[in-house]
Length: 447
Image 1 (cartoon, rainbow, N blue to C red):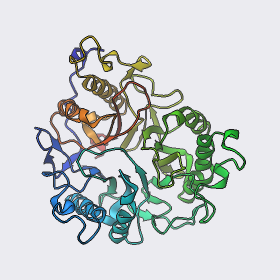
Image 2: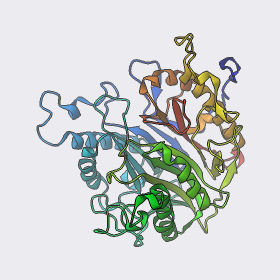
Image 3: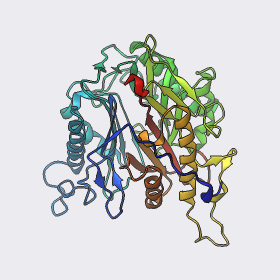
Image 4: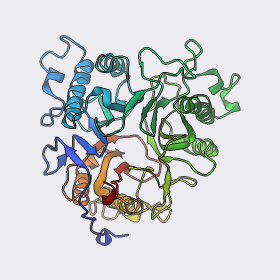
């Protein structure tokens, strides 16, 4: 489809509230530091910035960077100072957080960050994910986090589960084995790290004891994660595999995608969750031999909330996937790229005869937005109710062009955006993949 055929965005009044919007430096666009959506609060792309100078000067301490605490601790403290401001804007606090995911550009940042996180959350650290990525949008930025919380007084309570999981949780991480918020269940990101201290680092059952060529490591790791970690954790939290509604799958090697999908889909009997595959650096995890991490959101077995499969205007990126899952007031989309008619759109390819005409990433994002708008309409909501935009770029130099497209599509509303540079995308030739979470407001008569 040509750019001139892009439909005008639906101008439906959003049912969400941007929190603490700020100007995106050197542009006419705005960033939403947080989004309040009914009982939920989202804060994406949280970094140690003052929203003017990139990474805040007190973090960098350019004239004496090695004095006092590690720069990574200073970075972590500023991130959580920013997070607390977003929480406070919705009347929430640290105890209301249900999930926090951490991305790093260097493993040197992990331990300092975790020390600060322990100080912030104490003994009740929400389930989380930690992995390594190529680059963020600010020079000298080594950490970025995504956060989800419950708004106090909304009728949804936060409960840290206390069952003993099937694996040892490292004291360095210290997170809860699961967390409940209404009918939603959050469990930590799962890897094939050894179930017991001293048996690893990778669990022996996730590696063939004689030779790697006897079985595919990615298939062993994926099966191990699902059977030995994810399923027992879900059971402990009152959930089950068929109640998973969203999965973010972090892979360090693009060639592992088909084998991962083969094992992943075999566990869901034709009804998988909304899934997004996200490339990490390589190595992408703090145990360098690991290939994959899987993070999930699920529904309680005995809850009132049901999952509903939403079909998009184009088939999902992979055979056997679903376009999106709706569950009460949230809509989770599978990862979107500019794939129409089972192939990347023609406008994504640079014309070598005239390479300086056209901006392919704009065409790609317009295609993604067209697909997302149709999915939202089918689910009874609007793209304008988006609460979290994670944007994965092959080259963050494309970011300014995408801001123009988002600003137009969202009717100039502040953007809940987190841009990350990754080394590869699931479909060759593409420049961008988007992972979207959207709020589904209740019908007006029921409000």
